[in-house]
Length: 208
Image (cartoon, rainbow, N blue to C red):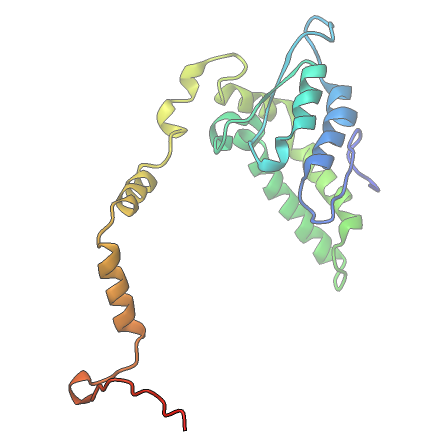
């Protein structure tokens, strides 16, 4: 965490991806520390919007959110429409991070970027891209603050029609099971000329 952004926290997993333990640590030790409730009452509900990945859903997390009056909103496949940081911030952040990455590689020729440099490089990108006006524009475009449901038309969060049509076609069998099996046998069976094949009854083995 050398030269990381002020207030940043870190956690690691064996796979490198977020899991239930990392998420719980973030919620309990980081999120609660910075969340602001309008009335100052800790019982006032807070809405937390993030994607519905399997690692984000567990009995422990649901119990935690009820105990701390946090409403987890997990709309699947809607990051492009409802997650404010995805809409306005992560694009500029990635571009700035890649720029910092390239500058580092140009100055430190021959060195390999490891996990020990990530906090500093991402921290520089963070302060340049995660600025209040950009963050606020993301929440506005998503219709969250100020609340405006018309900002997210239903058609942009509905399943892609081509996928639905393809699934429908797949659900309609084009051949019977007998036809499919017959075709598979023809494809895999050895090439035998049945006209020249003499088939005789199997004779009983002589016990002598």
